[in-house]
Image (tube, rainbow, N blue to C red; front, side, top):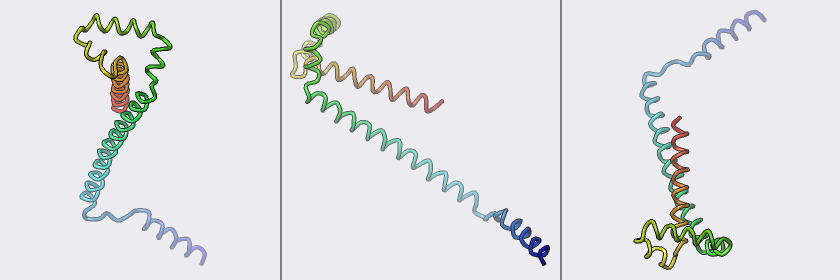
Length: 128
């Protein structure tokens, strides 16, 4: 009896080891892959939007905390040299430097450029 049970067990294992192929297996696979690709696009958009919102909130917090004024006071010579260099390179930038934000606007743009380069770098690394 034990040998018969072992034979039945082996037969059942063989039957259940291979799943029978459904007639619409290819169509099912296409639907699943399409949904996976769509959710990746949604994730990328969602993560990009969240990063943008977080960057804007962080930048506004930095501006509102007067961090740039404190940094300028800590290194007034270097800030003055940067301001003079920008004024020599682009005399049209006077309206930007004399505006309500002043040098903070230039630092903000430089920071955003660094963030943009970091995003491009992560995209390149992701593609590799």
